[in-house]
Length: 516
Image 1 (cartoon, rainbow, N blue to C red):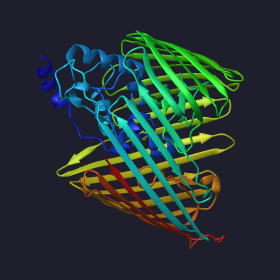
Image 2 (image 1 turned 180 degrees about the horizontal axis):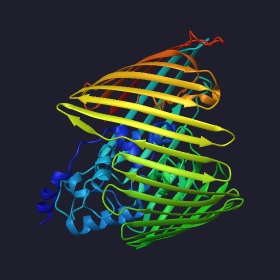
Image 3 (image 1 turned 90 degrees about the vertical axis):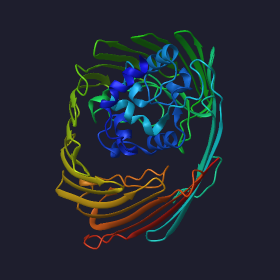
Image 4 (image 1 turned 120 degrees about the vertical axis):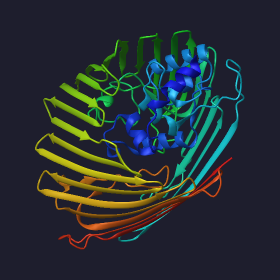
């Protein structure tokens, strides 16, 4: 019966999303410019060593940050009753998932099945080593280098080490060191070294970067991952953390030597309701998530130097549609937001006593013969002291391994500013090459335009364009075998039409990765 249902669902398959599109679906961001280096680095690490949804335990599934507590509970229940998940079509049938969400998980997860249902899987040891170096010429020479190592024993244990120098800081230090063990009984997880602590909706305990809630309806709600190991180059906590599981109850504690603070929590996870109480030496929080028919209700009460509260709901009456409401009070500022998400359309409006934001994005996917056509239009307005109006149009064409992407940004705050770029690429299983050209005219810093640029994995590049000039870049990768990968990035920016003289900038990056 299970296989029959899967075969009947094959008609729901659609084009497999690429890495960047999958990140947007899972993070809830409306554009990659809303994310930060540590977030993109986390997704790159998952892409390099995906989570096995058939082997990972509850603690590992929650720690990866891809799934919320309800999805994890549904996944474990399905595995217990139906055995290994055989395809992403089947995953999309599980309560709490959708075909789109299941497809977006593909770059970061795997579904291995090498034994009968219910039998333990053999853990395999993997190693990945990445070495990178870069140099730039910008009114003087500068150099940077980095090294990243990751080892994993299936879904049972992992070890991360990352160290680097930058163009401005050339001192070599021990970097980030983080190790984790994931148990299957009462000892759910132990983390030694650097770690993240993320609970509730982020009002009290949320280390590192937290994305704006107003990029899409999906970004209204956050999924706290608790204590997790990290390979970030800029971790916030270093110490020891542990989780203990007793059926539906989980308790955990940690001590951060860098922040000099203890952290503890107790949570309960049911079929439809999850609740958690967490505290540190300077904050306390209580949060919940409730799933009722087609609706998710979530909220948090917290103290972090001052009282804070948040209450929200996301309603999905039919597949492909979402409607959201969010109200919050933080730092003495009340905020309210409304949003809707339809197939290809996202719209959010937020108002508070300090600012107003409106964002709309429409991005349908069309097909014409051998071509996949993805036009996109994004309009945004924000007012704090003054209005900033943004518009962005994009057009992506793909046919086989070839792709052509164009983009035009127009911004008005102090004055009218614009940026346009076009790139052509060839994408294969072993070889990728992208060539991009950019023109920009931005006379005021308040009108600056941020643009996500392709780079080697682990390098998140979102420069702020300002002035009048042009940029050219070449990005490529070559994977001669399953174990080896080489990456190259060349870029050059010139400001020939800027009134105030600005030096040109040339940069080259090389990166090598070996997997064992």
